[in-house]
Image 1 (cartoon, chains in turn red, purple):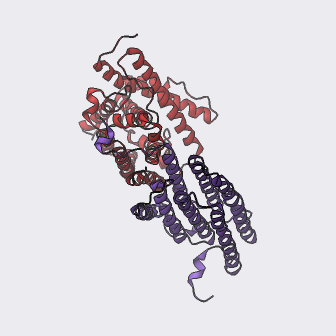
Image 2 (cartoon, chains in turn yellow, orange):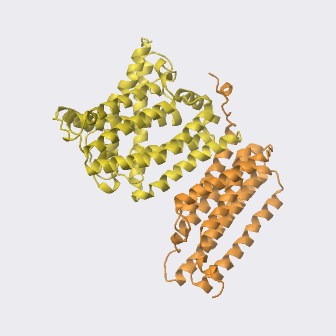
Image 3 (spheres, chains in turn green, orange):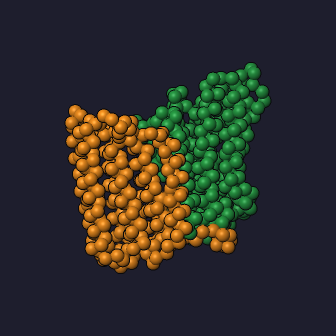
Length: 320
Length: 236
């Protein structure tokens, strides 16, 4: 019998797991992707080394930029580190701060982070950074309805929009999993995640090819620790989205149901394993489809929208 | 917290859930056809949809203890997964060969609206079909109301497919999937129907295939293309 951890410690561990695990998950995905392409690929620890190197470097800012340019990466990372408090990362029971915000609250924080980064990019006057932020905002506006309909589905499935409640509902019986509403909403969310993490349909998430550049372009003018924060931020965002998909929608198993250190430790391992599994699936999908033209993005999003809308429809006749 | 107390929609159970999921995937395939630019891929999607229909028949047969339905599933698979696609491919392949192409002809240029708008319009159509069928409140012992409503949505989306495409191939496939939608509805509402009747309905499809086959051949010999855009002029 292992010792019981105090609740605040578990809460802190949720944030630390996401904060420290995110670069590792990125490393695993990069490795898998390299293997898929027949390369040896970087070390799994490479993203940590990259961050460490960038944190030691000098930071420069464009002359015209105001304080906001430098504050934006900090605000963004703060947002990303707040979200793990709201979603089930390690425990199946709600932690005290978990009820601070619902799914929409988490969504607002994600959008706020993306908004400050885009605003900072606009301040630089660099054409690439501006192109990136304008594209990011345009396309996030068209994925917004999909996310909203996924939230509606969750609300209809559970009667609340707390992520903990949906995870508990999914765990409760097999009938909750094999119902079109749940499967359609999960598939729609997965498509949004593919889009948001820069995998499909147009972006190359590592590339600096301006045809498909969205997220990568926004950080062009940042350097040193601030650039490190942005990079870390996008890794955090990826792990957070994977966590929401795995721990709320697809596989809310392996979470700690008690406060015992052993159970929580197991939950940390389970979360990282699930995130890596989702990451591998994403990498396989990313590498098996051709990228589309930029303006084909509406087709992809209309597909995701279709799934989410059908999810809500099926619920209205009581059978979804 | 009890979800039911908060007004959550209760899960329908594994069997009904599975039937609804299969119906929903069939509807999604219907939407997939709106996007496909090649006749070959449309035929493939039609095959996939027909496979799902047979799977649904097997699920219902297993759950409701109706051995007739196994036979129906087999027959429907033989006809819709093997025979109809074969005939369609030969027809279209011959049309392609006459044009000096090796493959089935593309139907890419036949969209009257962009795929994204077509999907959005079809979502509206699906909503109308879905809620109209739902408003009838048909509840049989084997009838998950949602699967029936999805069949209604599929009928309208199939009509939509035939409207937004200007080539005979897509229109034929739209018509065949319309028949799939009606089979789905029949399966859900009247699973206990005598096998002979179900089979008779199934063979109606063969008539449709022959008619559409003649239509495709006739149109192709006359207009030397599969596009129906030439038909807008009244005089040749």
